Length: 493
Image (cartoon, one colour):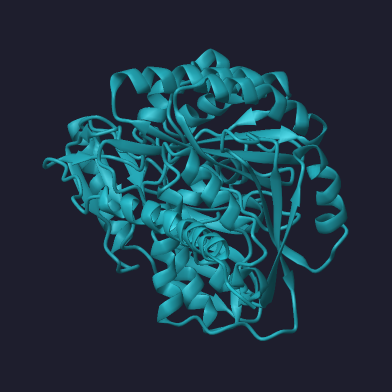
């Protein structure tokens, strides 16, 4: 068949278009990489900060707790004596992923608990005894040798176990209350230097106040956690309209006994803003998991750049959504172990722009108001000048353990991630935005999470947490001199 000039031109145009489609996202990702820096901020001596990078605070002393289990109690008692003699306050820190100064007090002592990370597994009762400074990733790797897995934990494994208890973090495990539900007991050093065993039966008032108590009642030392079997899980997902989310959640998650891990997402690009959603879940399978090789590890940097490329970029947000919702992505059809899935690092979304920071919000909404909450926050978010990067949805069952309880009934947690410039103007805009979002939460009978920026007044906080006054009275009952202290306590007490 004769090829005409017209056909050649048409073929050439098609090739150019295809190459453009392929090349444009690559250029976008490379431009994101070129705009980053590996320069890390260095704090002056005697200064600490947290994950917000907005809380540089001068402290008296930073003390790393010894790894040795037999030495820790004596050293901690000496620190308590020193603090009392000098009139200093004590804050307890782990991986510092809270964002409101929860791990620091001006001119106080900061206890770095990370070295205290011992582990021991009771293979008969399936109970892990672990030092509070251990990271969840440490525990996952340890349990992997025994074919076991963490029962309940947050989406990232970079947090410390003691820190997660202090905020009563929740996970993405199906039909699960927050982390408190998997805690059998823990030991606590109080302000007098006494080590107390706390459980639902022994020192129960302390048990309920320390979990989700933000380090205000003492120093968590050893924690006993329930563990479960590691198993093979296969990924599935559904594209859906947000108004169908709770109906599909019941059909594909609650009514499916094989589902183990589950989360949802809302679309945050200007195109179809909050008008599309995905329901993502991992189902138990008899298939053998894939073996992760070095090439898979290298893909993590590509994933991070795709995420970072969505910052202040409508194209980047659309690209990320299209990639995450494409059935053509090979990982959509693979099988992994539960531990591989749960061992996810915060570095996957790391911000390397020193002029900005990523800040989390979280709002817990009962099912009956799920769609109304989305409708109420949509105009607020569209009007805001702050860059919304992500909204993840996680179901959290009612929590009957933590006294300062955010899951007062079964709820859906909306986890919002913003990118904020480190300017006074954007800080004011964030405070205004947070206040409006909390108002929408109160309107929809929900609660907001307390580990983040301290932008809500203590009066409004008490509308959401009417038990707050009682909580703070109990704090002074056990610690009348307010030895254990932090910026969170100063702001809300």
